[in-house]
Image (tube, rainbow, N blue to C red; front, side, top):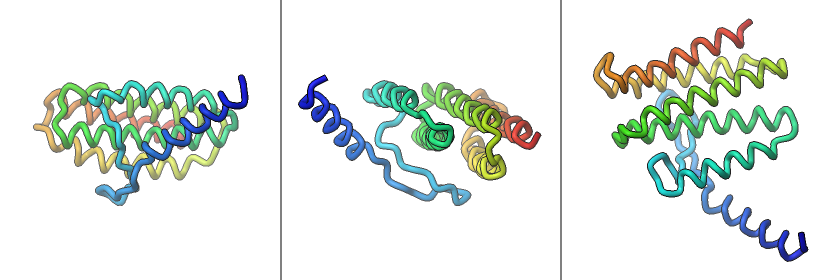
Length: 164
């Protein structure tokens, strides 16, 4: 690759990071979440996911992988919150599944690397309380209520695995 090609790619990367830099907000239960510029249902969401998959491949160190998965898990929580708050019922299932998936990936990586798990267990507890508020926006035992409850149950199971 030529030097000018590298400069173009570097410039595009910097522009992308600046444009899509999320703003910090404080959500219920004192969870520091980021307000995402691109959310499920958006035309650009598939591009965002593709970008995330590319960045995931560039995480080489063990700590960078854990940090990246923690960041993605919080992003998925923000997206699930967005979907619930804006009543995007067609996106609830996939957002819920993505959240559970990344919680599992993070747990797997922590167990694999035998890292300090107490902080993650505490975050899972905070996320569960936050998810309880999201769940209660739907009538009890409806399909959408159950989807969010599944995430709460998943965090409980994963916390148990981390405590072992």
